[in-house]
Image (cartoon, rainbow, N blue to C red; front, side):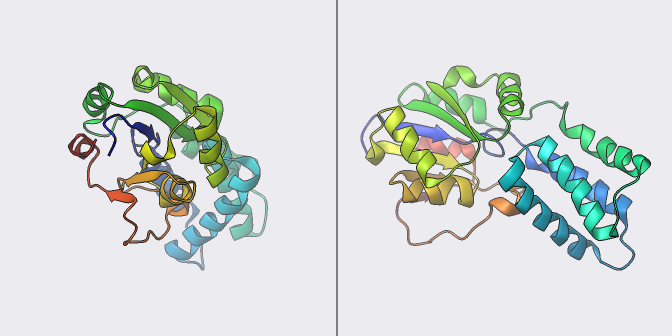
Length: 229
């Protein structure tokens, strides 16, 4: 490896915990919904299908998620939610809007050390205002040479980042928890990748990784990065 490299970091569920908040709301939603004929797994499958469709049109974040909860209610009950029911769904999702950012253990210390010998960038997807709020609350922006908030992470996203920042693909690594958004498209764009799994990774972000791909470094915990970079 070259002595100085470019490390591009994902944010949600890589630098700070995120999806466990959504899972907490979903658990409360499924308890409240208590569908009369479908079990919990089948009801969750309907919600996943609705979310998968909505993120294409409405993007990511709490507003899109709230829409998905309402749309799933309508599909499962074959009728629109009443005013009271819509209010209850909004109450359940309100916990996502105002909450403290909980850093993954060791993140701040690890970024501080890595920044002494490498160039660090942040690449996160989602609603710009919502993601910026989390970045500001995390107090991590100072570690990064540049911060990029995008609507989606595709192969073209990584190629555009390489061109915009004049990066050397052979010494640039994407670091994240999502096979679908962080690892696979980065590898397709010619970057190295570091996969750090998170037990709360969103179902829609999961995908299969090639175990024989030498361009993907698999780690268990974020602080292990200093042992390799």
